[in-house]
Length: 121
Image (cartoon, rainbow, N blue to C red):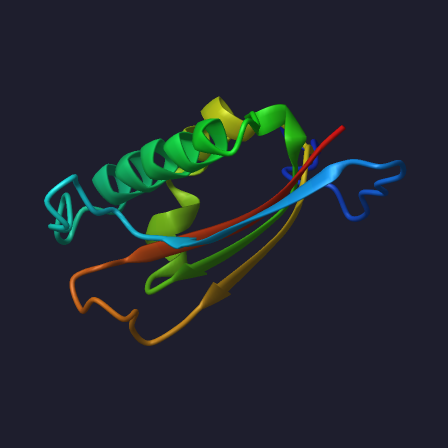
């Protein structure tokens, strides 16, 4: 990421008769429901974004349709080191974004959970 470039948008306006898609918080779970990469934020980010990608595709949406993400992390310093993972999927300054550090997630070995909203016109 270049110095001085925004990593997210502060405001996204949606107009028209679009279909709104709400994706519940996704963890770094594999197909069997196991957490991928315990203790490894990068591995968990990769799996979480794969899971989000599958959710978007199942709803007939793409990353270009995402207008808002909410991210919950157990270690913000580790999360910040993995911004390239997010940028690969979302790009620079696309959706509005909120990230909050919390003490733990519903599954104890999970380090990141991401939910999103997309609008398909």
